[in-house]
Length: 247
Image (cartoon, rainbow, N blue to C red; front, side, top):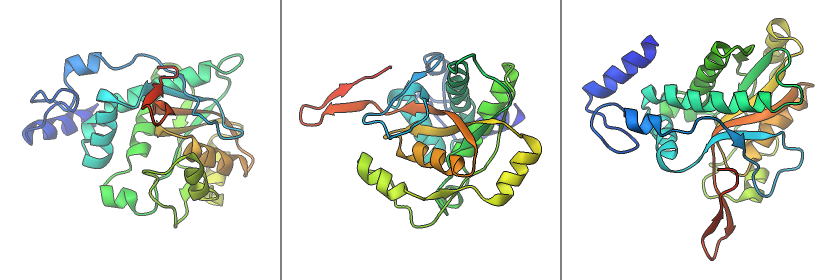
């Protein structure tokens, strides 16, 4: 894509290096790109929020994948939207093919909305950009998929960093809504579509569950959740052991 070429060229001119191994040159070198996961797996958090749609993720949130997410989101390394979009597309494809009977009818990818002001502060909306890329790749793979911004985040939501599952759920309760204008637009272009909620990282599932609630409250059908990565679940905080789950 022309945009990827321009973003990559800019990174090279500014003296970039691989986020995975620090090799000078591209933001993601060929060996590190080749080492990214191929496919996706169920990524149920523990505990599972009540009513959560089936969640899928392409990778565990560590190593090179974690570096990709952070560099794209926090440091605006825009060339990384390509590999992140591919990982999200893998999760979307696995989620849809994991439905009984496989994907049926049109599908809309709905990104989790940014907190008010965060996209402006970052200079871009990272979740939206990788969701758009994932939809494009899914269409190239033969799926009837588009990406649409349906949700808005209300003010007053705190930064989720450092919050546990219960605190995250309480912080996010009622924080998202689907404006009437978004519903009308969806009804015009994609009536009877199934929805997949998309995010970069699935942690406790609270954010995805709130997005799912907001969409279902206006009569829409959420069939799955898809993320680039999911955090590994800690099973014994004192011992520092981890339940590696599906990854």
